[in-house]
Amino acid sequence: MNWIQSLSRAIQYIENHLIDDINIDDVSCQAYTSSSHFQLIFHLVIGMTVGEYIRYRRLSLAALDLLQPNSRIIDVAMRYRYDTQESFSKAFTRFHGVPPSKVQPGKVKMFHPLSINITIQGGFDMSRKLIDDFYWCNIEEQNGEKLTDTEKYKIIVSWAAKARGLNPGVFDALTEWVLDDSGWSDEKLAENEQILMQGVIARFKEQNAQLRTYLSELESSGVVNPAVFQALERFDSELSGVVYDKRLQEVVTKVFSDFSNMRERGMREQIAGNKTGSTGTDSVDLFGYINCLKDCDAGVQWALFMPDMVERLQKDFIVDSFEYKKMPAMRFIGQEGDDLEKMEVRKKLFRVLEDMNEYKSDFAYDILFMHHYGLGVDVGSWHGVWGRFMMAETPVPEGFLYFDFVPYNDGKAGSPYISQFAYATFSGDMDALHAREGYDSDAMYDVTRNIMLGQGVQIPYPDKYWTAEVFLDGCDKYSTAYMFSADL
Image (cartoon, rainbow, N blue to C red; front, side):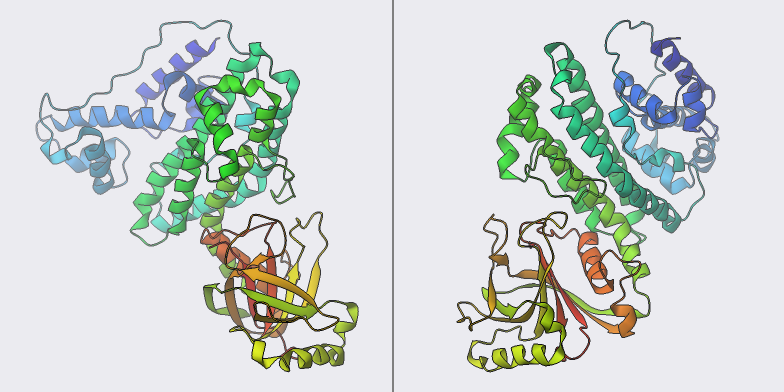
């Protein structure tokens, strides 16, 4: 059975069950395929999602039912599987332009059943596996479920956490596909445009639109992290070809205006970028458009699940304060070496800096400054430097290192670093506060970073990435504050 016949069967099944709970798995069974693959084909052929088709048909029939004598809005809402009269009224008004109470004969918007009367032969035979492998958020599966706003949001949060673990690898596969010269002959160009533009990019646009609508309906209950809407806006911009990275603006504009530009290997390299590994954090020599999309996808997911993660990470300690600081130009002066593990050596270092009181900065604490010289953690070794932030241009004592910090990003890897950062202070059990087990680095690092990710704040990784433990009571006591580089 070809896809046209299968889609016709699925549409007829939907029509026969519009007043029932419609499960996407049951619909896709009519096409003898998986639900994810069916939804993709349905969208490509019909031009809308399965959920949209069902919603349009139900709202059309609901209007006809409301025109019947003695019809009650609540009864019609329940018949067409809406949880409440309020949610039905909102959907009805958006579709028809008038509320259910004011529906009139001849003034309703009708969406009629689709009928497919052609058979498609030939065409593309390449698998859309690249599209199917992304962990898509299927909000439609929640329609009709009796859930609280909190429960609905938790389901979206759970999806986001799973997607963050799976999608980086699929983006890497997408990069490999774009760079595979054997798959970009003239004969395959149209098919590849379908996969990348009408497949991957269009599907992400669709998902973002569904998420925005769904989350907007939950927003009034206070469960939604507002940062997710900014992340969705940024993602939509990139998906539309309006990229934030100036280095990519020209090439992306060319490809979006004429996909045949993808014949050129150099053009595809800038679109593909480099692979970043299963966690999406490996270093890259070339940052491409797919890297941008990968980061935007991560941004949406971080905004959804990071706030909950931050709460779970705080075991026997709490965040007392959290803020972002934009400091003037500064100079960090200190020393690096194994002998600084000895307290007497460390104190001697800070006595030298204490004697330079006339150069003291507005952030005069004992610091363990950590960085990778502007390299990713997968290629650049960790460096820990004990010292203090001093005023810009402070003379450097003999035997000391220094790193300059400026209020702007000069676009180059490494020093000067950016004098902008998140600043968190903590209290509680000191052993718990400095625990490493169960954390990517340690408790203070993970919590500070994850708050930033949940708020959509840009971490300048790897070029200007640095962190620092702050010893508010001196280097001979526990550190109880943390600094994390930001590009504000």
